[in-house]
Image (cartoon, rainbow, N blue to C red; front, side):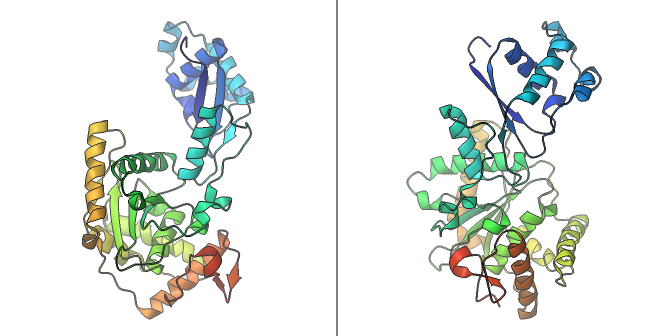
Length: 347
């Protein structure tokens, strides 16, 4: 603590179930350091009752051996709960992560602010973007977004002379912009595969949106050791997710429409990213991913859609995107000039 002025705490759901996190916050409190809490969507504020159970839920013997007492830990956590936090939205993307980092670094963060992505405020993400390499990630999983940002930083370093090839992380479904297809440089969608991503409705919608926009080049990148590769149970979960979404929207999707598309994706080459690996390993893995992006002709899918199925999926997407914020409608479809989310030729 002698060389520290400020402690930034990324307050996720389990932060105070980690003994070392409790220890760091307690030391900062004792030393009267500035503490900046950043509350993620799943964080629950500690209460008098919950801190009383601290000795029951944590192994704190090693903290006590370092002269930290249980009453002082409880006092520090309750003090933390009273601090005005920075708030992270439910859906995470590159923009709001960067906004938080820059504000904290500059010391100009306004406490109580909920950081929003630029796509939600009408800046660059809402306008057409010429970059044709896109990255789809489970925006509701902090670990997934963090790992995706590691990949983007590594690719940015390697593509400093070719900035237009740096992938753009897609925001939540209602704010996504897909560039127009090009025969010279087709759109390539990197599917950032983490545990549970195919159970996320927003992630599944991203695949359907890309398919509706005739994105034919997709590169799966597995970034989680416990990611489940396509098996019978995998497709059952996937079809159940889509069937639930179709039922809620009133469109007759049985769930089997997505399985052939995902099967076609995983028949192509699959790359790996290990977020907890060394910098050297991560650099090599990022280089392999970059080589696949450069060799995009090997990523083309062979999955075709029947006109009837395209109609069903298009109607379903119209409903879902409207529910998620695309409120500018024309003839039952989002206006192409304002959202650029709709492929008028898809039908």
